[in-house]
Image (cartoon, rainbow, N blue to C red; front, side, top):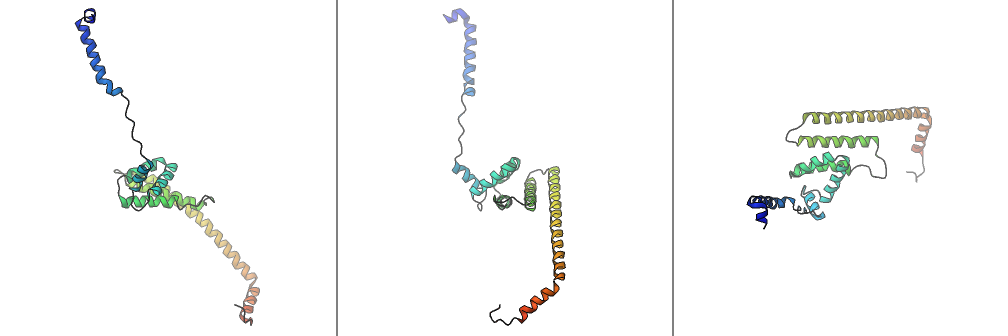
Length: 199
């Protein structure tokens, strides 16, 4: 018999090992498959972030932000999950301004439009920083410095546009001076025109 061959002490060891293996069995069992959310569940969750903004629109905004900055998207979702509807509407509204009001795919965004979009995105980033329990002043200061730099670039671009407008205006004044008599005669003709059908 087995007991005679290995002795009572050996049987005890075998039984102990068996008990240990049985106790560990649940650890090696296959984990139950996690329930996957249906498209309807996802849409319902997104719709719960804001009563004013449809879930499909929230989904599009989150996808656009994730494409540009996954880190910002993660931070935004953490804020949205707090269900502060007033804040959620403000943040999602900023995103809509950034992505939905951008120039269409038919044409490339102008330099001014691209800078305005970058500034809005940085302003959005600042708003997310301010929602953290402990605001990282270094990160916030860097974001503000980026916004300042973008504003300066936009101001320089606007200055170039204004200088171009001034140059064009000066040219128009010079042309009118050269053609003063012709302009006056044309106006005189319209005032003295006796054609009853004339405007």
